[in-house]
Image (cartoon, rainbow, N blue to C red; front, side, top):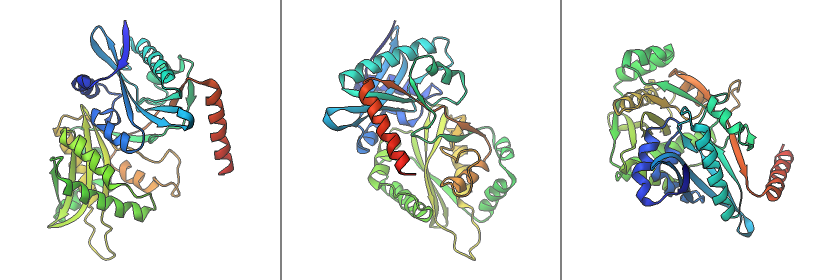
Length: 350
């Protein structure tokens, strides 16, 4: 018998243990992500699926408030299950039934599931058996690159020649990378945020919130699951980035760098940073490094992620497309009205 229930603080250790040991989980389901979701205006509700006294599934729901006391639930990169288990389909069905019942009590229109499963996979096919409403688009990044964290020689061999050159050149130029592990070191995350703001400004992206960065760092850094890397030339900070490790998976989360001035020698600090991140993540027990977001196949230079996608592609690995989202429809009438209104807004905005 599979039982789905709200999680309590007493479940924190078992929650994290299951997350660390399950390939479909990432930091968006980390126990410490709840304050970040709340900061984003989407307070979290957690649910666990149990079978014979052990955890077999997780769902961290972000609740989006709607007018007249209604809500819309969203499960980013979840539910988290062992999709390779022979009973995965049965467990997924139990989670869907449990979430539908809880969402109905909350007067939610629907629950959007966005599992971290690959397009065309057996895991994705399980969702198609449950009469949910599929949507190929994702709210999180739809494509990424996953790099197997092998030994140094094999890792470098997987990079393209320009990336190998940049990694080696950065060392010759004297770029040094240090690691910050103390989640109470607010200065480190503020330095990271400053470089990200500068980088985002150059690219024309929205400016990230410093308070949000601090929440992520204080939660995941203090729990020992996030690390900040800083690439320096002497005392000068050239680049900084954050990596989160969940079990055997590491995630490239935030990063920023100084722009190299015209005529200044190329230091390739961002390459030194990524190289250090991969090696450190491997030493911390990770076997797969998620570069977290690239432009879709066939995208041209006008795509906002085109440049960063080329940078990440240089580090090898394989490109992965996530399967999309599935909606558990709770209130069919209001759901159809909301969907029609969204389609109309998209059509007008063309």
